[in-house]
Length: 290
Image 1 (cartoon, helix red, strand yellow):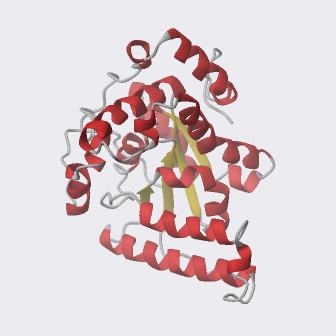
Image 2 (cartoon, rainbow, N blue to C red):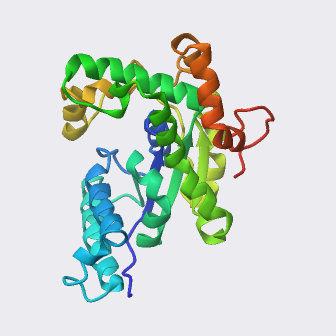
């Protein structure tokens, strides 16, 4: 398959929901190489998810409509790169297009195959704080949209832990045997980004070869109409917090202590034990190396 290179560098900011992807996206966007922040790239990921579905368990439905799996991959890439080019134009033709979407995380190896020029900034956070934040969102969603069943509104702790694990495990396992993929990924802990944003992103600037940003965030109301519409939407506004578009704050670190019962804390620690150890939330210290 012949691949036409993109005329810009490409970074996807991803990770589990409520893991700090918005904060990481804002920090990276302080680079002079980055353009204006755009709305999350869910639309692009929905299309990639179709490729994931129909190139695997439901491939028979595509066999009569594509010459081969390689042709199916090429068609998908062409559509995605066209949309990325449009996003690049909307972002002001920056040297580096930085897009945020948590939907990339569970299928990151597939996205990496589809877009070999893409780099990935992956936000990680203590799973107990992630789940405490999801539960808080769920409270809002049951109020704003009582008939809509979501992960957040379900109160299903086991399901939330599975979602957290699924966001990272495929990437962690794949990169262990794929050095090329490993070089395209930088993990950034939310806690490190809050405590020392310049230090937390130092490795990212170097490895992704983009100009370092100031990493100084001020109160920044969304500039784009699309982002404002999302933040005011009856459903999507449930994800907005006091820290959204606000200066950096450590207020949410350790939030699980007042939100979770002792039995729930134990259950999350157990179900997420592999990633808690890898992300250094179960003792140890030092820099995050996976």
